[in-house]
Image (tube, rainbow, N blue to C red; front, top):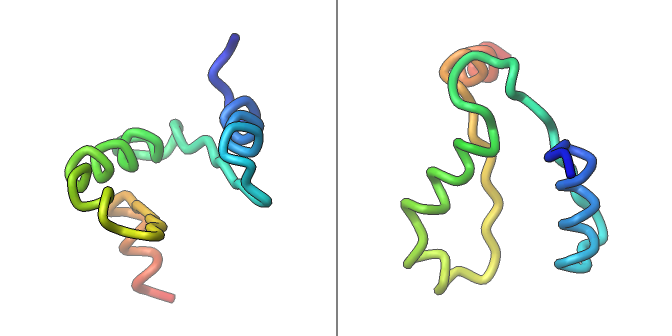
Length: 71
């Protein structure tokens, strides 16, 4: 099975019984793909996340951050 944004969205909706999931394919953006950035954060915080009730992350490339700051 091809690993697409749609596949990941459906898997998350089904496996974790989520009401709403958004998956965006950003592999064409400069820097690491979004999923890889999230994995890096999750690996870094692995022990801490076990004690956190809810965690939402928004990881941006340096270019995305620069654009966000200009708004």
